[in-house]
Image (cartoon, rainbow, N blue to C red; front, side, top):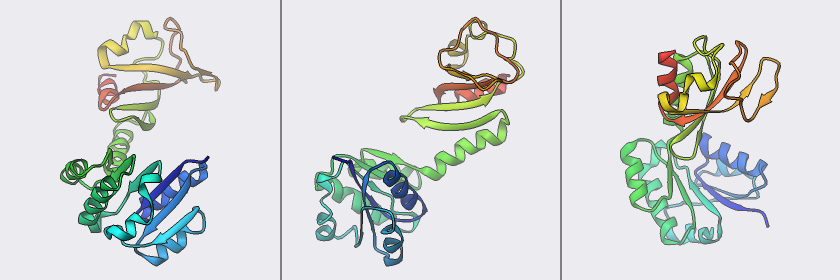
Length: 219
């Protein structure tokens, strides 16, 4: 049986999540109070419904307690609605609720009313993009759980020719090299700690937020 998800709020973020989940085989129910958004989502999701997610009876008809996950992605224009929707989902027994926040206060309230996970996509993307602006070696970053990031970067000149054993990156900066893509295109999933880093190598690191920036600032 395929997994089931409800996505409430079909702005740019909600619509993109609904599409991505559908492409991964998830049975998505897309919900919004705007008919044009519901119509657009109905072209690719399993089911789409036009309703007010702050209306208890209307939301109950979506059976949130039967869904594997419910995403409340109501946007900036309706923070109160997102809080009410999240609280209702929790009261109705939704097993996993992910809510979109616009700022830290909004995030705290969403957690208080029952969200299992709170995300702020604009802030998170902005922080990652800032790192790419400041450090041209960074190719990409993505979150891994709630407090770790995977970072792909071109080997800084200060690391080239040195071995992982020489660098002691976990001890000095709190980052771990989990893979290296060599200049020839081969991916080494378990890097040899005694092999020198090449000038064309791309390094994949795992570390907490800010750890890679500290490494780059010292490089």
